[in-house]
Image (cartoon, rainbow, N blue to C red; front, side, top):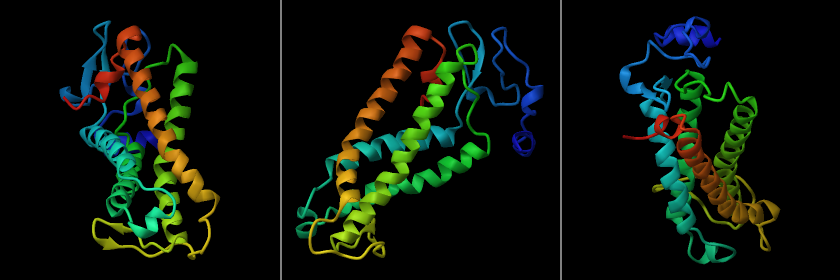
Length: 211
């Protein structure tokens, strides 16, 4: 599957890519703009422009959604339409993000020498992706339970749950708390990227740099 995708994208199959002296696979078929050099002057794969754009756009949307959020029954009196739109934009960006991942637009992990770091990175990404999908959906559900119709930049969306008179339920409470939790996770993600850049000096941060 992976090799057939590589062939379709014009890259050499995974098994045929040469390795650097540390055992990392390099991407000779990538344009030069997609390669960066680590502290050992070895070329390492860079994320595609599409993945980089989605990554930073998602980061901006998450922060903006947090600042425009409302809680409790205040949502009924003054629905935060901008918050709905920003949150659903995060969900919408997950579609091209996953397509690009399947299409091989992400370089291989740099931590082949440290398997536990590679495993931790996969777990962290899976957790973040779960939040990026679950938060918008739970917010949409919570709004529906409160009897508020969500919209996506002026486009009305159907309710996905029946309205209730009392509290909107556990999922709505989880949504409110998870909105802050994802900021902590994003901050931890940034700190780890900084650790890779400053301590390990393996070029991880530059792989996702928009410059």
